[in-house]
Length: 184
Image 1 (cartoon, helix red, strand yellow):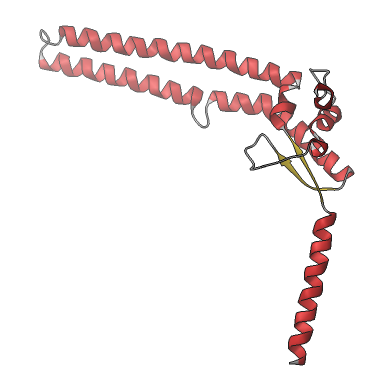
Image 2 (spheres, rainbow, N blue to C red):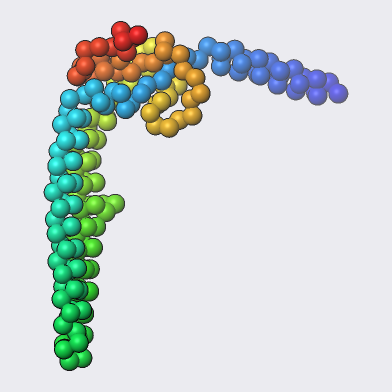
């Protein structure tokens, strides 16, 4: 009975300490979409990725048009072709279509050229943002910093805890001169 009372007392003291500690924790949030849109290098990187993507899409579309033409020509001529020529033409069409699909994967696949180029251009910028967030959080003793843009469920956020402009100041690259609080 005495041990049970001591254990209960210890658990209550621990719970009390945890609630006091939780009350002293500071929280902040950022809007990485807002931050990235205000970094000139990010806009430049996005523009370069858009140009590459558009060029590769046109190339793939052109290749698919060739496949479609090959298939239309085959359908038109198939009545007159002997069986061995039909199989040969079908194989050519299948090979060409597979080559186009391979090209599409090369450019837009999970490990494709667009993915690699995006990592090359955007990852250093994202690292700068993350490091700035981390520096601010450590300097101001924030226990947690949430990202409003990343789909974290945030039902309410007071503007006084938004450190997005501070992150931009820390990075030192601001496109827009109007801070959020100045827009109100």
